[in-house]
Image (cartoon, rainbow, N blue to C red; front, side, top):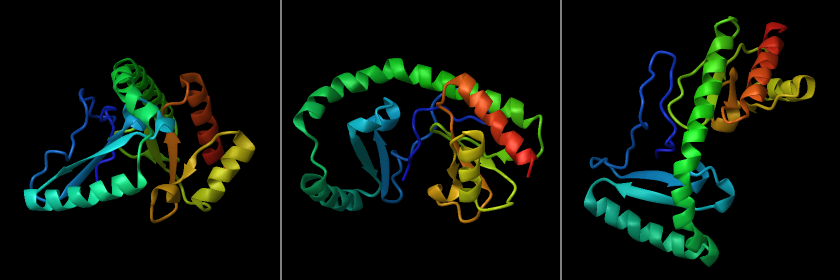
Length: 195
């Protein structure tokens, strides 16, 4: 399953331009590639998504038959949204550049502040608008996230929300307004330094 969005692959060392890869062209094993308006047009409330199936043709045909039954039974899209899809897809062309610019600026600010401390590091960003911080394990990620909200007024997600098997991970959004993001990162690092 590929949950990557059109946001660029970003790391400290790799400033590669262009979208990340996709598994949609895989022909070796049955693969489902997911996408939707929530990511490509920043419209999570519209609940419009799609699946590209690839792999051996016999397996794709069987999977598509089953997916069609599921889609017809449980996931019907209402008519107004269906009519709006072409316009909403077209709007991604004006939304994506702004999202990419903000994500890049916030990631650069995070890297700048990371260079000034030694308490944590970030994992490579492969797509989307989240960044994962590897933090010292002094308590559970959930306890740390709650402390950050209560004491520093900064919202982060504990790693277990994203199936990290152990503590020591916080997940942050890179789409926050740039000044708020920079201030929030400073508060997070201030809290970590005091532990």
